[in-house]
Length: 186
Length: 369
Image 1 (cartoon, each protein chain N blue to C red):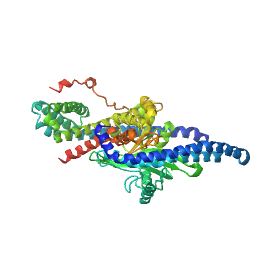
Image 2 (cartoon, chains in turn green, purple):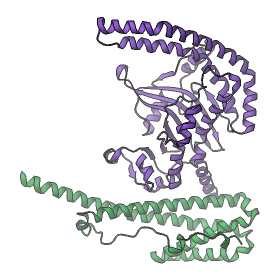
Image 3 (cartoon, rainbow over the protein chains, first blue to last red):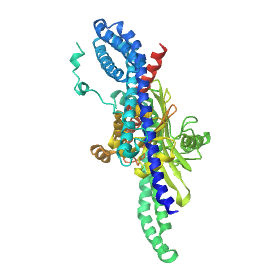
Image 4 (spheres, chains in turn brown, purple):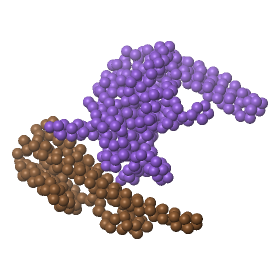
């Protein structure tokens, strides 16, 4: 009876800790896939926005072409399973799209068009979803890190298949700098 | 309050000012008479009765204290006909100035989230015609509010529900708002306890929320742990430390919860609480509360289906004029009432839920194009 008490309870605690690490690991994978889903939605929305914008933005042909090319590259990287390249390209695409949304300010006729207003709102909605997905992913990674770094999680982590924790989503260095609006409003 | 609104409301109220002022003077005279009686005879009678009760009958003065309270309620009730009549005439004029076909009823409407029975509306109409008003319109076993309690986590369980001052209308083209003053009580007799007293707002949105999300009071470490274990919803840990101290967020989907509860939303909700903190109070107290940026009531929210429910516990009695001392012609109460109503009507704009509705509509239109 005493052996059951002194061995059983610690074993039970270790088991629940192990199960918790496995659950948190799976949540990180789920959250990571969630970002994917939202990025795909953005990629699908971009042609609609470019169609509306291209009718009036005569001086932004290069920007529109860059966006079209980047979108194609993102889709290719996704199909080939090149995750690192893909997320780098997604970051560039996001930056170019932000530039496009600011450049719209130079075209008052386009800015006031109902379709362009709706396109901007739809894009803003997709960006909110992406932001929510990233925050969700960061929260899942943070919870997994806590579970793995606190003893005895560091001993149980290899058993639970957690040898390496995915990094939190962070923006690249140049995105931390203040934006110079003059670069877009020419 | 814009100048155009002031002009319109004054025009609508003008025909009733003379009648209201006469009623105010009558009620004020009655109030002063009753107050004089209470002071002259009430206090001495209380002292004698309390002594007799304490030394002769029982060793408490409970009955005497209850009698004293009843006496002062009788004094205070003198202002009731004026306050109710004021509300009946002035608030409809104020809500008419809002865009969006706003309606007001001192009790409630026959349909909607806070629907009341026809007999309760008829009882109010009878009391209005006779001038003999009740303090609250007591509606026990209100089926619609019970349905609200079964659908939404943040509505506490109750045995009786008191509703007063119901409003409804449209914000923009798409959002339908209903709100009322509500008091929920549990238990009976000596065990009766108020579990909620304040404003309840329901927004019916033109889209379905992607998940069931609850923003409730923080229950402390143990409380939150227990809720997390037994509720079907998961705890959502957020980035804002102040917000996390005040609230606990639960949801059926972590990502969908973060889509609604953005860092900006958390700030706006806390700002809205501060805004609510000073409404209902008038004069110097309102100024003091405004200057100290009082934290305000903890507004609880729940997003489920296509509805958003907000419950704000308020200690002040809302949508009431200040009393008998001020003349109706001063019209300062009109500004206070307008400020109270517009603060609550502005909830969708304050929390940018109107912008969320516009974005959802745009996504739908773009995908159909």
